Image 1: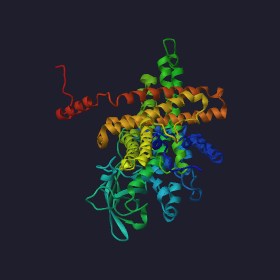
Image 2 (image 1 turned 90 degrees about the vertical axis):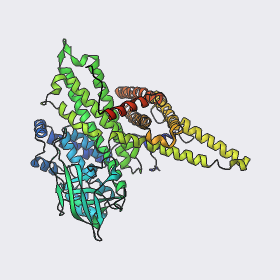
Image 3 (image 1 turned 180 degrees about the vertical axis):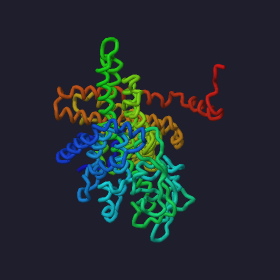
Image 4 (image 1 turned 90 degrees about the horizontal axis):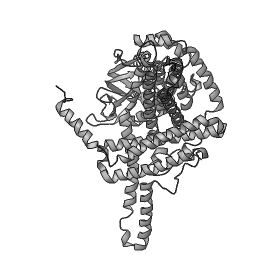
Length: 580
């Protein structure tokens, strides 16, 4: 029986490779795959002839109302809602693949649909009561109501606990006052998942989630934001002035809003990843076509090594991202209780891989890619936000590392407490001391009696699996070294935390790649999977080089010099050197 309490990454820092979490590589149920295939074909029929429209709508900064109506008629706002309420009942794997297909055509369209299902109404799906679902599911599925997620405020972004919006308990209702900033679908939405402070006003935290509808007196919408990218999607401020929210609109437990928000974001991140994969696949196709059509020096530019290098790396990034997005969606579908670290990893890697791909695709297209009549510059602008929203990549890196170090630190504290008084009973104490030494070695070296191998990877991938195992041991030693070096001050050592996080990101991504390639080989045979084996080899080599650099810089780095230069810049107000 599957143990859904296991986190692959939280186990990894303790040297335990819980490979059953990732192997075998997840696949869709045949019946749902058939439905999904039809949906994908329908999306292409709806969107593939709209390239010129997407360009015009980007310039205008708006999706026309009649086009939004088409999306509603196609059922694209009911992807994750149960069939009995008019939805398609997609799990996260099918949902992510659907957003991937939409994103291959236009990011603003994908974001409009994704903000509705990934975060806007996701709280209702995860925490809603039967009465709440019965009341709103039908209208959300049809698109009669479009949903938005309202957490960010002018003074509260990554620090959600500093929310200033207040929901005051008035007996039979909450009185809601405050404002929210940069709300995707803000100008389209009738259904808002709003996070407000419900505890004492002079304390941080104590958030609750509330369902607020646009027709409630006191709800107002700001003007459309003039954005760098995703210009055709709606982004506005939302204001709440003495809004009476019925008590039955409380979503999840009172004061449990932080947990609700984090669960929504974790559950919805496969949508962000799916959109990234769709964008990457489109860019790869555009780049390959241009590389073969564009002639310079008497031959196509695709024949030149540096162009092949760009496109080859795009392919590796896309394959790895798709593997990890599929895994994280499957973890949600299978009911795993804690995949927050894995979800953060997928968000970071997918957003950064898409950015690299967009940048290199534009570079491959040369000067033509810089012109607005081609989609490269729009895709580049559109994808930049992915590294910022739904948790900035910088903050998520700290979360990944600190979660792992907290687990290890707790384990070490428990071991050390068992040593107290052991010499009062030398015979018993010897056994305790031996057990402590054995466990301490496990934390420091990554070896554990429970699991220390990736044996389920195909034999053809054994060199890459051994690299994974070696890197896990080095990660555990790295974490142990950092904890002993910095102790409680580790929370202030953000350079060290980033290095730990980056190694963890690489390890999870590599494990997903090995799982995916293993499944392909087992299904199709080694000869048919030559290119996928090459992808695994290239990606493992990248992981090896990046990890070696991060391990080395734990003790040998220029961190303090870099910080000193930044501090000097703060003091002087800018760059102070000049040749004049």
